[in-house]
Image (cartoon, rainbow, N blue to C red; front, side, top):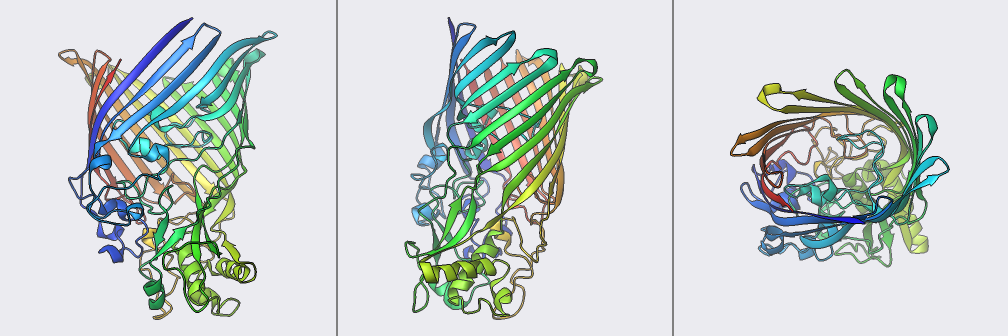
Length: 575
């Protein structure tokens, strides 16, 4: 038997690079945006403010005898700014008390400001099944399928720790969350192989905690348990009586069972190409929202009229999404080229959050008096019909749920090219990686019928009218809602200069992302969004590392992160 123990410790600091944009702050908080559902993060940090000051690390242990083995990995972190610092605006968990620390006590464990958490923990073994090699792994692990590089396609088994990727010096192993499963890979003759897994426990993606710098939704993350009514589009007596709507204490999480996958691969030697075929059934890792009227609800001020109706919003993780995929990987001259096509059947896509909330609260405010009348759609909006049905159900049973999402079939195609330019630009090697992708949504209704997606800060579509003036309540163009087609690309370049001075290797790099057209049902593309990053890394004795970087965000009428530019500096040591 042999064993190895590898550790990385990193110190990193990040601070805001530009002033907050008033358009991304709700009217009620001093900005010009039509909703205050998404602005806690930008209100807590001014230009030049540190938003992360962290020490973190990973520790990995592997024991192996050539046939059997064990691998475990933990990560730990302590963010001095978030754990000890105070913020001027606050968030719902600390009741928006200014000048005190943010409250992460009910956040997801991985999103907390300090922690020690288990990542991988699995046993593995190699066997012979007749003349065919069989590799098995059991436990918490990451399984990487498909050929995606920057843009998720087939490779959606493992949820993402978004909070980890926001921290300075983030690495892939910190941000992909292992899940408990059994995995097998059986090698067959003539270049064939079969892979399969069965997942034992469902896990969710960890999204930004409300009030943290990159958070652009104040109410969806675990521990963020209320949302504020929009500043526009509601009658005065509603705004006077409804301050915040509480989150349903019951989160409709997905079940643990029923998640599995199968892959078949074939290597064709004559053309030096590997093909892959994939099938997976998974439950949603990211949440969608519903509106609920229920006597068991606890809401702050959401009781209206002579017959009060408790109202809240519910977080749900829909189940049973079928994912098919095809992939290839080959070389064309000196360029490595790969690609994949994926088809997601019955993918849940959320209704625009402001449209959903306005419809639900308008039905509540009028006690559903307009339901079934010619004025229903004009007053309640596209979501009104669902809210009416839910309210009527509540009136008869004490419980009514207005589903805030629908299922659509989604097709995605993408391709990646990788080229290593040896001795280019005076470097030992220049690495160039590019990826382009297209996403199509089948049978998506028009925005006038039902708008999907778009951050709530940008409000409902332009055909949602103010009940008192008869005018549209939102002058922002109908951009950023989910479209039938969307596409974009990603590019990264880096160069290696060994022994640039005093034995130190320098590694300059740049990254560029451009969502060219359309908005996808997942966060992949927002029409017109751009991001650009410049970094300079240093490496000494392959043990000591450092970097300095700046990231710009721009583009997109409905991009909620255009004012989140930031600097980062990191130092790491491996031992």
